[in-house]
Amino acid sequence: MATPLVVSDVAKSFTMHLRDGIKLPVVAGVSFSLRAGECTVLGGPSGAGKSSILKMLYGNYAVDEGQIIVQHEDGLIDLATASPRKVLAVRRLTIGYVSQFLRTVPRVTALDVVAEPLVERGEDRAVARGKARGLLAQLNLPEKLWALPPATFSGGEQQRVNIARGFITEHPILLLDEPTASLDARNRDVVIALIAAKKAAGVALLGIFHDHDVREAVADRVIDVTAFAAGKIAA
Amino acid sequence: MTDEPLLRVSALSKFYGSRVGCENVTFDLWPGEVLAVVGESGSGKTTLLNCLSTRLLPSSGTASYRMRDGQFRELYRMSEAERRFLMRTDWGFVHQNPADGLRMTVSAGANVGERLMAVGDRHYGKIRATAVDWLSRVEIDEDRIDDEPRAFSGGMRQRLQIARNLVTGPRLVFMDEPTGGLDVSVQARLLDLLRGLVTDLCLAAIVVTHDLAVARLLSQRMMVMKDGRVVESGLTDRVLDDPRAPYTQLLVSSILQV
Image 1 (spheres, rainbow over the protein chains, first blue to last red):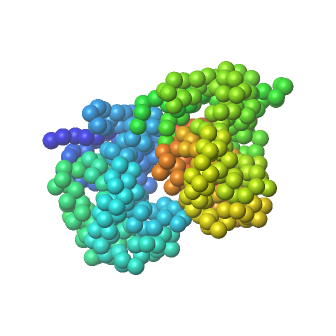
Image 2 (cartoon, rainbow over the protein chains, first blue to last red):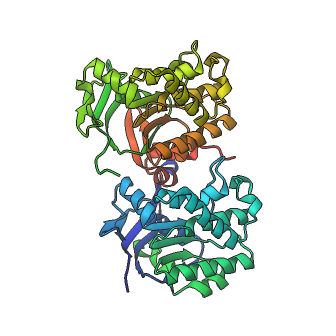
Image 3 (cartoon, rainbow over the protein chains, first blue to last red):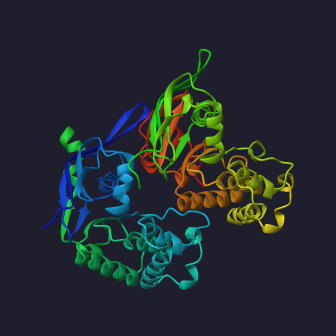
């Protein structure tokens, strides 16, 4: 089975310069790989470093040690050391990300927030908007909201916009940071179906799901992040 | 997308006597990329911007720009006339204060048309039609075309300045605190407009700002300056979400939450 992403011996800590330079270790010795067509889930209690691992994979957090090798276009790239320009190219074409919270931009409508990643990949704006409508309808977002900027939406409505934005493209790797946290049961089921469709299309998914039912429904493998606790190795 | 940068800057320094303006700044900028330069007053960001746009000559270092024919030219070795031509055609410069970038006593239409005439356009009807088109793109009503910018609000003046700069189809735009001094609702409108224009026209831009939210919204890459030196650089969201340098951590932790 294809492995589009391999993480080996990754370590991350934060140095707080404003607090006398104390060092907060987050994770160390993180090693795993993702397989195409599977959903891998990061498990473990809050604070174990699950989100930090996702953010390193997306280039949003710097990596202290180790490698994150991703298959991008026809080659392999180490995200831990890639230039900002390369990371942007990987985000545009290879790795998609559904963050926990939507970062809204003033005056941009929900429909365009969702369509944007497709437009960035060179899709025609009208086609991208058409696909965005389909996803927003599937996620039961009332049509009267589509033409409004999502800043004033409820948490669940914003999260559905965020999910649609993450699922609209055909990135071969998709990272999910608690995509169902503020959804009702009906919409949780929609997300489960969307994840199943991604798996069927051969996408490699990596997610954090605190919701037990969702995790049961989508997970092919669970990686226990406490095994990577940085304190354990240092001690 | 091409594989060659548009601008290559290497070890650029500017000293005012023994005082450091900016020191040893090195970076590349690619077409379509927006780079934010952030830092507090006196950090050297405006000195850097003025050196890059050749409004100031650096004390040492080089900057080369890829001309439309694909050849790199060393900016500080060009003649004054060549630099001025570049500034009028292939570059734009958006000042914090629109009065510095506009002619306040000629009409809005003439402010936009003047840049077109500078690149050789002579057909009055065509110039006026292009001016109308650009005014509408920056959301200024056509019936204001004969008004002087003196009669415009601050936000309108700034939008007019942007139209004046972009009408010649530049490939690189320098912006010095483009939203400084505007009300927040006016800022939001301007930022949204800039974001759209930069994407649609595939513009490269260097934006100097002290506002980290503006940097997050407009730029993909960011350089943090302090005392004339670059203390941290990288992807904008990486620098803001995982700041590594002590000074960047101080800046990020000082943002007021609303």
